[in-house]
Image (cartoon, rainbow, N blue to C red):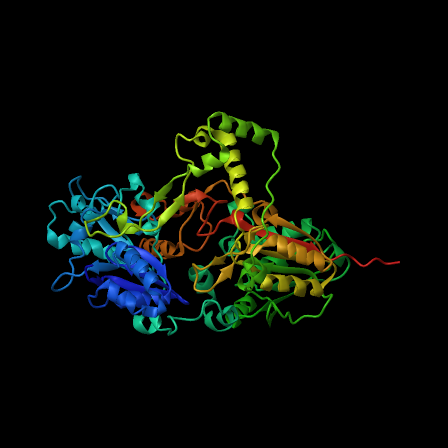
Length: 633
């Protein structure tokens, strides 16, 4: 077996304990644990992979070390070592297909004539700028994922390849070398084909692999993050993260020219908020108020409403972050420092409590029951349609069980194995799994709704007959559930509680790790059940429906890193691209006569309800719960 050596074009990044290795020539990025990083580093000098596996680097058992080595080789993180010197890493890429990822941001000014190369200016993830020379601009303009790198280079000469491949590094992430043409599935087969967002770079990789802390703070210590890490309130929501409320903090056409806070106030009043405060001052609590835009708009809109007879509004905010508390005070809001899990308020105090897009920051715990084996499932009772389908299958000469066995396995390959850049003999990756049933089997000839029903029936039967394994870990929104309990105590009789966040009524919580701190989606049915347990009358509603958000118009959809580049590009043209749910027609008006948007790349448009500025409004829900009024006799 040939000796392998570590590529010289890798950069190492980390988020907590997770490492991300970025290939600076191909633009490929792979997530791995610290022990796999230790395995990579074992090849800092050329070594026989069998000898490395015997040392069990990072504590990885020999057999696994051999498997991981094959995968890392397939991703070109490890390379066959030549007898002398270092391997030529660029020549092997000539048969790959360079492509500019959708999130890359650049300004393309056409040449003066058709034969002149365009003038291209790239903008990186931190807003840095790179002017491409004429040759590199011409080559970059050819990178559509259909031509090979050799075809893109054509007669440009050997000196042209390095400046072009430099664009694949993590700071710009403007180029990816795919193993297949885009039209042949190159993007689909390589999940890294559009990735543009690496995490902070690890300087001492060996120390990190050995267990040293990664760069920055711990993303899982959410209390410490809010108390100690957030220091620039505006940058927190304009650059680091965002919320729906922040995207709609100014009057917006999709909310009938209202702000998020004003639309929320109107919706809550319609749901019965403050009805119990007739003839007196209503008391309102906001927990985790961000920059204060929602709290200010709520207070103004509620105070202006005389529909329910409340004589004024007395509001207070509770926030754990000193920096955000200061920002809320600048909006004129009274603020108390405090923890949402231990609210510093008395019971039966507030007529309305608002917790907007903060429950995902309160953490989860693992449900131990989810790790226990499940009892065998009972086979579903046959219905008339199932009986007819089974009869059709049997008449074709095979039973449903035999048809199910006819499924085939389609071997999936690691990144460089698909189509292969060069004949380096990388081992194929693990099998992708059964795709069945195979074409030509009786089950394959049953089509449409019937075929779907056959597949479902067969899956149910297989599940009932097979030994039941744990369904995988399930997390519980323990922080959000405690928030419900805390707020239930603080509500006056007749008071209303509003908790909104990214999530789903029934889907289990999932971790979002694209930010510098952990956030968790919310399973809203669990919150509803807890609210009812606390004696509240509760319901779950879609936030866009609650606010009557018009989500049909096209809106700017971009990742956080692409937004940084777009903002820098707009600034170079004298325009301020603020953090906002930009409709396409609004951006056209902003740029009229100043910036030709046909020359700006990195702009992506989707219907507002589907996605805007990295968020999907349709995936936000709210718990609305009311505390029963005290009967007077």
